[in-house]
Length: 191
Image 1 (cartoon, rainbow, N blue to C red):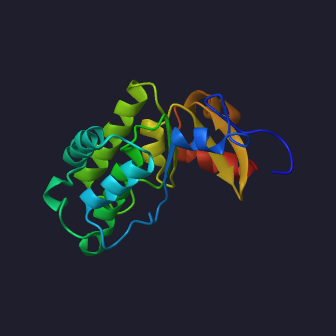
Image 2 (cartoon, rainbow, N blue to C red):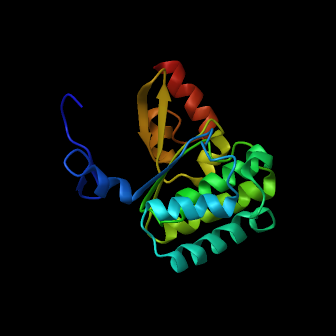
């Protein structure tokens, strides 16, 4: 960076990037996973990168696989899995080290309804444990139902941020219980 500072839960991400990375996980919308590995091997590999004790990693992996419906596919090479299954493998890999902050880009892409619900419940559980979730999505209904705070980005600029009630105020629609879609369209039109 040319200027400024980045702090992740008190860790200076410039001076001590490894400390910041240890508490963060990122899952892109097209997660890069190793096709030749099975989901079990992949999560084992990721846990090893974080220096997790094998038994702890194994228990955490089993829990995540059960929640995400990956257990029947634990021994299948990732190259044979659907996009949705690959998304769940990437999510399991990202969560195996219990990050304090998880950043997700379109986490429900490719998931069937039951899997999407499981992921949403998993994320809500993380929030209940005091962890933070930062999620990007074009599915405004999901953002409306899940987010405590919402940022509206238009053409690469953050044009509004806050709770849904605050966004309604900013969009000058405070009393009509407008949906996030209505608010988003109003805010973008006024930007």
